[in-house]
Image 1 (cartoon, one colour):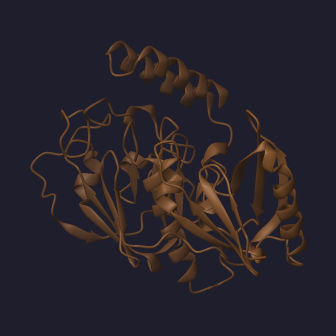
Image 2: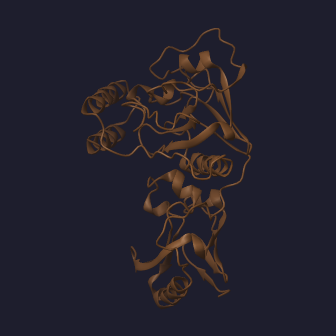
Image 3: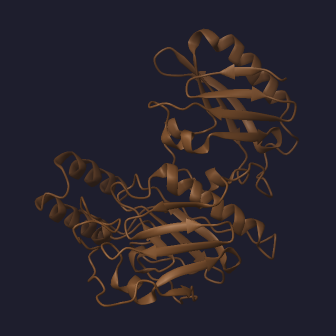
Length: 340
């Protein structure tokens, strides 16, 4: 095709075998788009193309990727908000006819396997090296190794005792990412051989409420607010160790040296999700057995009512202490109740 279709926040350039999506920069552009900058999506990575009415006089051209084709969406596992979907192009309604033309052109180029899950990633992952700051430590990835460096203001005693961690991607089977826009987000690595050892209540679907940080905590410069566990004292923070398989896996991510936890202002989507996608792609690519899929858990599903009640109780304590505003308390409580 070779044409360009400019929309709000992004421009799509149509090539003979792919679509190059270039994201705009600006204060109204989602930070995830600015972080991604551009993405080339082969036609073979798409399963369908739709054109639907949008909000306030717009139309939305949506290219739907095949399951398993994009490491970013695989890592997100359905947790991205609609406005942060990189496959949606929002256009003024007066361009609907032009958008319909390109939608038809894309549909005509869908491959014979469009309805089937992809056997490998077809869209490139964000490139390493990269890093981001979580609540209890700093995460780094150089393409071969993932490192966690703990903050004394946020890391639990269990993590201090384990010491700073380094993982080779060949030692892993997958990665779990729970959005920081949830109350208990985290990034958790899955050591090889522990794929079936799912964390218990309070971890597989998210952390326990006791890990929620208050304002000014974490990042190595907070007030010393903890994660609900006693902070380590007199332990050497600089000790670097290779991760050792743990059996069983710790129930809570704040107790797991193979995980970093998020919080208000820590591990934002535009930093932690591309990180998770890059790790996932590298793990999948370097697996010794191509048939063994990388484990990605979204943390979705119904939760134990007792666990929800405990989280709401702790949320109330944070609210009474002034660490959570009235609006945050109401929103998070409603979010937890909705997961019952």
